[in-house]
Structure formats: structure tokens, C-alpha cells
Length: 359
Image (cartoon, rainbow, N blue to C red):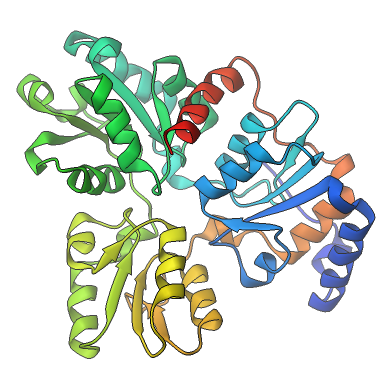
């Protein structure tokens, strides 16, 4: 996909862009709402009507039937989910159409369908429930709904596992192996009850015995931001700051999550910083834009990024700029909205509605 902003938006100053955004909002009024994810740039977050993680913003998208237009400052799968949950009279726009998600791309539908076909000999849909992370394409969400599963986020993954294992013998979890494994541990499973399906190998690289005894089958995928954190980062941070509290996202590797003081979704991390006593020292293992915003928002606390390298940037979240937002707000009636076609939309809606119901 090719996308380029007109010159007037690329060359506009920050102050001019902010003025244009405010004026565009005033013209449209309450018929439009802006959703912003926690990983967005600070200057973009400033203009959001709703700020949250993918789960919180999904709830907003499902509930705001009073608006006609939803501008989603996030990545493509989030805008797709908003369109799936939106009413027929609503349109969803992504300010930067190139904002994707490498993790979502790790679960290609050709590979997923091949894996599901192979697992039919182990009970298939009768014994295995697919559970897909929000960070997946609409097609995988539709596959999940069509086969009796549901969507989850890092906020409600334990509840999703509970839902699945109360109804089936096994869960096939897509696409983040670390979130799936860490959720399994939180849920009370043992490491030997979880196996990783490597889509690049025949039979997922697993023996029949491994699949038979597994409770959770984890798709081989990861978040390139969160795997940058290591247990060594935790050790060195504790060495340098003996009183530090370390909170990380559950997409981090299991040994990082095990060594941290707490782990949870982006909203959990925000609340962790908010409720910490003044004077607290907090190291955070997640995307740098969120960490920087927490440090700015709570100057009475020492808040910093865990690795000390200031490198965990989600380049796709970072794509959305004030330039993009100004252009989208002033021209959305002439732009292509994010539209999920049928029957993908209806099948995915089943899985998303189950997600909202369990919590």
C-alpha cells in the first residue's frame, strides 16, 4: 500500500497542525470521536477523546453508537475491530493506513488453516478451542468465531483461558507465544502442559504425544518490542536501584515476567504508576511512548524504561503523527474507511462479542 500526505500537511508546523485539528473537531462536533491507544505519541494522545488499551478501546467502539465517525489512532487490526463492533451507520478511519502489526502478520491464514486441519486427528473443534489475541487480522478473528472460540486481550486473557478450558480439553492460542505461556502460568498450568506450534515445521514440530498431553497449544509468534527485555535487564536494574518496583507487559519473555514484581496490560501498567506512592522508583518493560508519558505525568516518581536503552519503540504505533491526524480530520469524508467485508465481519463479531461478555 502506498500512502503519502499532501505537502501542506507534511510541511505544517506543530502549532498550525494543532490549530487545524481543534478547528476540525469544532466543525464536526459530537458526531465524531477519536480513540487513542496508550502507545501513541504524546502529542497525538492530547487530542484523544478516549485513551486506553486495545480491550478498553474495543468497549468504547462497541458502546459509542451515538457518533457517526470513529478516528482510531492505533494500528490496522484495532481499526478493523472497531469496524466489526461498530453500527451500520458508523465509519472507522485509520489516520495512517500503513500502521500495521508484525505480530498479527505472524499468523498467516494459510498456515492457520493447515494447522487446524492437522489437529482434526486430535479432536479438532470438538476438543480444541481457538482463542485469538486482539493483535490479529480480521480473518483470524473470523476463523476463531466460526470455530466456537473468542478473542482476548492482555487484560482478559486469564478469563478467556478459563472460558475455553471449561468447555474444551485444549486451547489453541494465536499468535503471541509469550502472552499465551505467561497467561497459562497465571492460570495455574505447568510448563509441560504448554507446547509451541511452529508453523514452519511439519506437524508444528510436535510429536503426537506432545499434542495429546498439551492443554495449551501456543502459536509461534511474538511482539518485537517486548522481546527486547531480558532477565539480565531486571537483574541490573535491581542492582542499580535496590528499592525499584518492576512492572512489565505479559508479552515479555516468561523469565522476564517471572523476575518482575508485577505484570499486566498497558492499562494495568498505567494504574500501577498512578497508584504508586510519591517517591517510588518504577522500571517499566513496555513500549517507550507509554513509559515516557508516565514519567511526564508523574514527576513525583522516578519512572523509566527497563532496558535502559530507550529502544523498545513500536514503529507502527509511532507512524501516526499530528500531520496524519490533521489530514484525516479535515478530509475523512473523501477518504476510504476501514471496512471488514462479510462474512468475515459477522464471524469475527461472534468472537469479539464473547470477549466482551466474559468480562
